[in-house]
Length: 583
Image 1 (cartoon, helix red, strand yellow):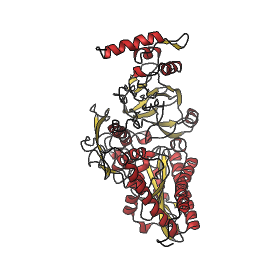
Image 2 (cartoon, one colour):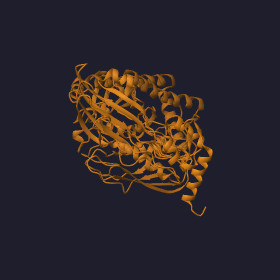
Image 3 (tube, rainbow, N blue to C red):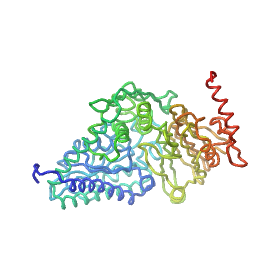
Image 4 (cartoon, one colour):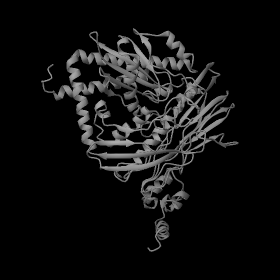
């Protein structure tokens, strides 16, 4: 097909959507083939297609946190290994964190795609494996260096000519606890990549290599134009904010995150100069993790119909000084990097609150909130590992309350159902409920946090909390109040002990670990909230009558379930005088 031939809009849309749907079918194959709850149910994975120039062509949207990490990982891994050594039926495995990767649990499988004996591109799947070895089950322990966190995999040929390389496979499985699940999840990634290869070669059979290559070029340029057009609509200026992680897991010193966001005719630049130096603690983000957070924010600010490919990523510009908690170096630990990245997302959005108040929410849960545990399963007679992330409150918006108990921003993973968890692991979930009065009060209230209690009958276990928010709850906006902070409690119904947010503990038989996640921040003054909305929240058990009266200045008659209008008028009138005596 000649480059002079005009682009046909119908063919353009057919090819564009065929590529995206190929990645979605890869995601479906991975989800349906996986063994671990973390992948098959919680959907902690992503898939993508790259062209011969290693440019991102299309991505599935399973996990927004992986938006920027695959973009960094694939070219670096392929160049490091050498593309001339890849043949049909081969696949590379990699999880190197400092050269385009993220934390060690996120392992990427890369397969070359051949059509009519010619290399035409690559497909890749990234999945969070429930265990990769290291000093704690689920490989999320609070350690001091990368070597304690699990097995490190440089680009290696995991599949050769369609067959798994048994030497490499056996070496990896020897390092992990959950061998059965890990083996099944690796095979699921192979199935996903094979699905992507079939769909891509089928498209090439129908449309031809030259045509598809030309339309991919146009797709990338089209995306670049669309992204630049959207960026031009944003308010120009310099926007700054500073936020903090509560602790690093080894000291009580907060971790400072600094954002300077510049929007002008040249586009959008994220500058993190001034952020704290990297620490010997599990809170360091890699360059790729930080890049993913920036990409997520940019995606939120533009038309959702804009495709995600290299044309989009060309407009993701950031300065992340090397040797800081947003761009760490070897051998600093990285397992909690996603915690820092998600809080960084919050800080970036906070910087934009005054400029685009109608589009920026108050503070959200703002953490991944890992729960990881393992031990010896007395029923299956094997070692087991389990990992999940716990939901929390989302921040209120200008025109709506924050959703209760969701996994915010790039986190976007799903709930691990109680039934599935208890059937497959020797643990019982004894409480799973919203946390009353955890919302950030406001004209629009924040979402409620979540309580989830784990009981370990019949065996001892090792449990890791890798989270945050034990010191400060999510911020409110424009007079809204912060959400309630998170709590992590050992044996809440007996000799309770408040735990830190980054700790590994050994549990005795019948011990209970209780998570109470934070609520989202409020938006606008709480005394301006519609009394009928307050009444509904009290009836639903979201807030207590006492909180309604004290914070929202609404008197609720709980016998007749109605608002006491006169008492409410007096409460709010008195509050106005207290706040402004001249009135």
